[in-house]
Image (cartoon, rainbow, N blue to C red; front, side, top):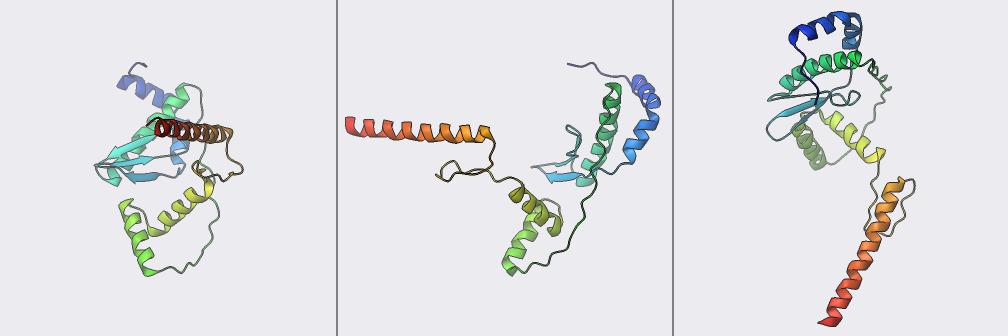
Length: 174
């Protein structure tokens, strides 16, 4: 377990890396805000372990900003310069016609996540398109899945056969 840094040490480190810290704090990293049971959670995906918590989204972001500053300082101390934020992709506009009840459901789900309906739809589409998890209960061969999932699929098939054999033995013994 690491040692705690005193306020004086933190001030000295902040002065030493003032220029770098100001540069990195000026970058706009995309912030992900999510509601958990009784609190809000804010994180920056490009800075692993950099997150904040609060009873409101604003408190979570405020806590995140403090953690981001400390995250940068810790990186500088260890001789690591954090990644700069990725360039924003060019966005296109798409008009989608949908049933009123689907729009209402999407609006409710977006409100639960404290997102606009547009960002909720975009994030849902990104999640469904970026990675398709294989269905191990089907006989379908899923192309381009990582080897570890192929191994899991084979283990699942083997386990399924063992279960069927055990059931048959038990049924014939009874």
